[in-house]
Structures are given as structure tokens and as C-alpha cells.
Length: 406
Image (cartoon, rainbow, N blue to C red):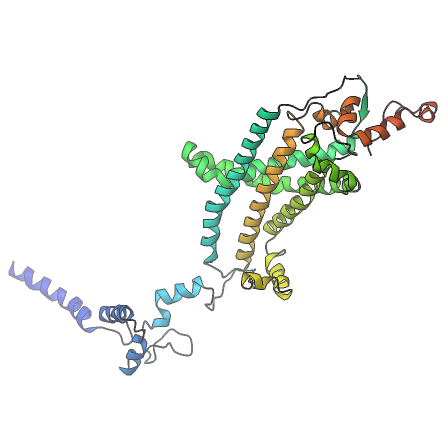
């Protein structure tokens, strides 16, 4: 028994000696750490200077080996874990990576937390509130106003409102936008709506499919946007008749129907909203798909600063990291998409349950004569004159009983 105790005592001596006596030169001890904490608490950040006065090495060797000034394996302040991670966080550490490409050495991007908070907070809340309020307002309007009916007697005759290629462009744009809106809302609200109800196992495939659909359907949306612009831009240029339509609220104020051409002022407003906001969504979406090839905000902010506009906001940051570009693009993408979706809600309402006969224009391409006279009287008069022109009938044209879309 005594021999066993002596053996244990002998084995413990080297470890005790190592703990008590071996303190590498330049290493930080517990006393060093506590002293630094006390100095910081007292508002004195001169611990490093105190170590210099005491002859304790702080700096690494100039050859970059990580050795202290006396050649020992020290733990100088610049090589402490907080120092390293501080450099990583603020991206001012001289880092090298085997990965080649933009931002390959950016391991931590502090702005990501600010982006996440805005995306999970204001963007979700105000965006969702906008859509719900729009749906609520449309519901109240329907209850108060009811469906806008055709006032006069139906004639049983129709006019060609939109050709096949026009309807193709419209439905391609509408279908792709609906797919993008649904998948975008799923990606944004999935964590707070789907995971709590169905769990991560359900949300994971939904998120993967939504992202794939969103990225690929976007090309159809952009193509349709160009087609719609080319087909209808000339007919959507504002003119004098639009002012009369706006003053009477499209017939809500003053009663009766307001004269209008192929597109009235309300339709023109929706057209330009789709073109401008849809174009903005497309550009920001391309920036998200190709973040290193299409940085938008840094260049834009630089021009605004040059023009003096940036001064109104205290100067806009023009030197943005790729991650910051993506974060700003995503926020802008979401904000504009929410606004356009609210506008499209109103468009869908008027083109379906809100107005009798309106869906036929895009659903069938033809509209009842009386509907055309009441809602687009200027266009209807011209279309009827062309349809009933004796010269057209004498030619034997197969379209003698129809009028082409303007």
C-alpha cells in the first residue's frame, strides 16, 4: 500500500512541475487575462503598453512564423482568438484561400444580421399587411358596390378585343407572375407559417422546389414583360381622355360611363405599374442570380453621391461587398414585389368578379358590343365602323364581322 502511494506521488510530480513552472515567455496567463479585464473595466486599455514596459514580448516575428520576439511560441495579443475573429468579422485580415473567386475569403459579413432582421421583421410584417389590407379593401368595395353590370340590353354580337398572340403574352405574364408570387411568399413566410404547422421535414422539399421554380419561371416573366410592352405601349400613352376618366373615378363619381379608348386611365396605370415595377423586379432578380456580374447598388449609390442626392441621406455607401449587394437586392426585390402584387390583386378583381363581361376580353378575346360601348366607347365606335364598313364586306374578308385589336 505504501509503495503504491509513493508511486502515485512520483508520477504526479512532473505534471505539477509543468503546471507550476512552465510558463512560455510571451504566453498569456490567467493573471494577464484578469489584469486586462480589470484595465478595460477601469477604462484603461494600456495593458499592451504595460507588457512592453515589463519586457514581455507582444509582437510576432517579422518572418510571419507566429513566434514571439524572443523566439518562443508565445500568444501575443494580435494572434489571440478574439483578434483573429475580429479581423475575420470586419474583413481586414490578410487571408488567403485555395478557392478562387469574388468574396472567397469573406467568412463573416456583419451586415447579414441587419439584413436578416429587416427581412424577418419589417419586410414580412409590412408586406403581409399590405396584401391583407388590399384584399380587405377589395372585399369591402365588392360588398358596397357589388358587381359592375352591363347596363344596356345585350346585342348578342361581339367585337374582337384581343388577338391570340396578345392573349398569349398576357397569360404568359400572368401565369408566370402568379407562380413567382406564390413561390416568393413561400420562401419568405415558410419558416413562420409552414415549419410551425408541418415541421422541417415538410418545409425542406417545399423550399427546394419553390427556389427552383422561382429562379426558372423568372425567364418566362421577363420574356412576357417585353412582349406586353411592345404590343401595347403605344396604346397606353396618357392623353386628354384619361384626365376626364380620372376626375370621375371611372364612373364612380357623377354616374354614367366615361368615354375611353382601347385602354382607360385605370388600365394604363396598371400597365405602367407592371412595366416599371416588373422591370425593377426583373433587374434585381438578375442581380440575385448573377451577384458578382451585376452589382447594382454600389454603382447607383456612387452616381447619387456624385449628383448630390446622396448627401440628403448623409452619403450613400458606394463600396459594397458582394454580400451587401445581394442583401440590398433581395430587400428591394421583396418590397417592389409586394407593391406590384397588391396592384395585381386589384387588376384580377376587376377582370373577374368585379366587372361583368371583363373576363371575356382575355378569356375569349371577344367582348359584347354593349360592354364595349359602355366601358370603351371611343374604341367601340371605331371598331364598329370598321366592322360595318361596306368595303370590308365586299372584299369577302373572313374578318368582315370582326374588328382587329387596336
